[in-house]
Image: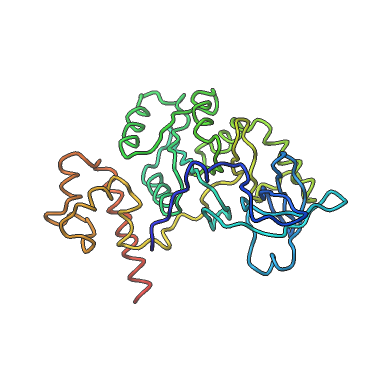
Amino acid sequence: MARARKPSEEEGGATVRPLAKREGTVDGMVVSRRSGFYDVQLPSGDVVLATLRGNVRKRGPVLTGDRVKVRLLADGRGVVEEVGPRVTCLARPPLANVTRLVAVVPVDHPDFFLLDRVLVLGEAAGLCSVVCINKVDLDDEGQAGAWAERYRQVGYPVVLVSARTGQGMEELAGLLTGHVSTLSGPSGAGKSSILNALVPAAGAEVGEMAARIGGGRHTTRVVRLLPLPGGGLLADTPGFSRLDLVGIGSRDLDRWMPDIGRWADRCQFGESCLHRGEEGCAVARAVEEGRVSKHRYQHYRRLIDEVLAMEVRRYS
């Protein structure tokens, strides 16, 4: 599995990038889709309801987040004539061109193994991840700062927020500016509260889109991209809905954990080493010396065992 290329800051922008010129068409980005209809946002900010041209439909699914060329019709609707290349692509949720993953962990019931799993999936998908520690207003024991430092040392931007009080929300919004972003985290982490705080008009946007498509107001199963006030788009979706490690091999996992990967590259055993505590392994030595946190290494060990078990089942 080749390492996914992370998009550049230019590619990460929510601004629609031009495709090849086609007479009578304008650039757009699909911001929602349902039952054969697509809401396409134009550079002006207007959204048109569109269908797919026949040859576009035959080439495979068009996803929310796809950059497209759309031909505008006299009745105010449109027809998607062309789909541009994707920078990134997620299967579940089905999203194209996402560049920023916000991995949410709540103070009141943190699950750091799940957080590290989500971060691995984000790395493998080529996304730039942010660790968001939510509900810091409940941090009676003052642990959030130490957790944040742990992940900053790995190399991730970390923001401490409270969707209830508004603490840290401006900083989080700044990290999402110019990106197409999605949230991921366990049930009860406060993802919906964060989305509503970042996009105050989220309820109205959802209602308008549902009305255009002909569905009810509460159509939460439809993946939508909502405009952020400061620029960029945020997906109205639970985030990664599939958290297994399909597509990640035992020889690749260390790449998707940057702190492990830095030392794996220095390992004298090269790619033959799985860094599971082998004597002389550079990763194991880095853990002993405190250069890699023990909790991250323990999570790596659990994940590599899981990947190895999947490989055994696959090839047995």
